Image (spheres, rainbow, N blue to C red):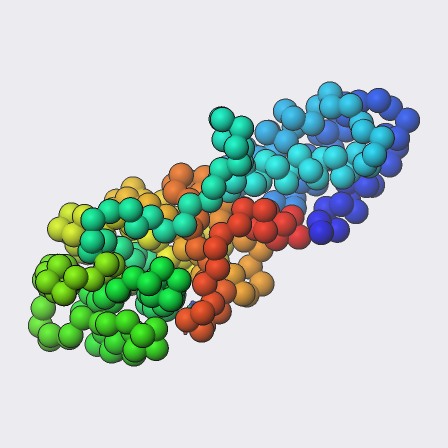
Length: 305
Ligand code: GDP
């Protein structure tokens, strides 16, 4: 792992073998390579700066260990900083932080609100989560599409619900997103569902009407989880999207989709830094089974390449 950065750092540290500790200037040179590697992985600049500063702080003055090369030593520090920034760092009590999965610890029916731009993979992810909750946690799940703007969206969710083996809210034409959400909660209470997944409409870009609609639905249903779905391939744009949704609506977690593509995953780091919300799940393909838990160390590995 980390061959590219490793090779560059080996170059930086070649002449260091005779010395005892990592000096300020050695680390400065190494930091430059780390900075480039993070930028190439699509990590947002302010986040890159924070990470590099942290790496520097930890590396300067460290005794060079006999057992590993200085390059490996710095890489270990970079990796630790990335894992911590992704939410997997050590907790204050010394235990490793448990990367949180979905939180369903609330009275049934538990509402989960799915938020995101059109094409981010929101509807597919709703189906994936439904399938996982049904098969792994034996939950009775209701899926409801609040997308009244795209006529095909409600049918798409109905089809996905069938594939996932869960129910979908019967479609009634002419209802507003808020009315659909309220009806979904009513049905879920009456028919004793454990979880209701509310798939909101997306737009091609962030606009006030979309934000207002999502905010209204959120206020009315008080979701236990508000999950922002973002496409890993959109890189820096994903960060703007996350910031906007978090500021306007508030999110409890992020699902990053298309991790099966060749995106380096830097967006995960930036989104986590900008919103403070944990990445909870990863979408790794079009199939309903392609949903993975988030492991900070794996994404850190991907970012360093
Ligand atoms: P929405 O507009 O946000 O609801 O997006 P959709 O759920 O309709 O997804 C848009 C397209 O992306 C569909 O063709 C999905 O099959 C595809 N898609 C969704 N998630 C993933 C993923 O994790 N990996 C890949 N490769 N494709 C995905």
